[in-house]
Length: 254
Image (cartoon, rainbow, N blue to C red; front, side, top):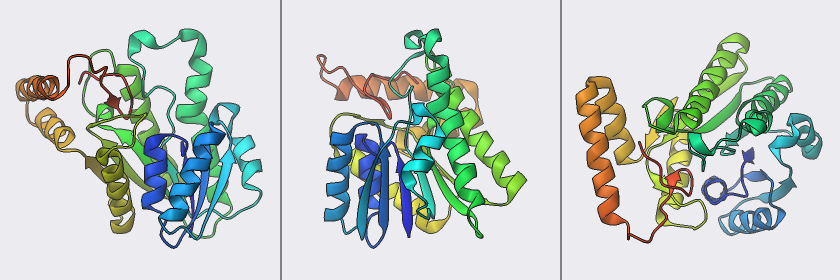
């Protein structure tokens, strides 16, 4: 099976690629050639049949990546790419909207449509989303909104074309984007499980599951859980630690 991983030069993307490697061919797309080389090495060590590096930034659009694939068949697309995962709303530069939207929405969706059109059977798409797509978060509404929009767009494409088999993994825990940690590896295994079991939506992380459940039950319960999660994170994190984000480096406030 040929598995295309978008955002494979990130720690999260490379760990997911490694988890999916045994017996498969990994097509690794990302903007950093050096990190892509490291990701390819991880995949080969994990048992990949082949690991092919595709240094290509989604900011350039989908056509560049289609060209880089060179006609290779793709059975599964795992989208771990994001332009806003490290950014709070106040950090978003309005002058960069077109670049953010290409990476977060238009380029991956156009790519999925192009790859699905080549196949006689549905293309499996695994989208790495965030719990912030379904729960409110002060100063992270743009990131969460883009994730929710991408989820909705994939579902709409699946219904309209019948050519997509969509799986969504919502990350609900802090994962350092710059260091390989047990949490990053565990996320990779969770993605592999979601792919193997065919579950349409998976929430990864106990705090994320608690937030989602509380949000569905009652706003006051949700507020209490949010406060408890924040306190727990402060107690675990040294004062000098800059923290992480939901799939990012900066601390995320949920």
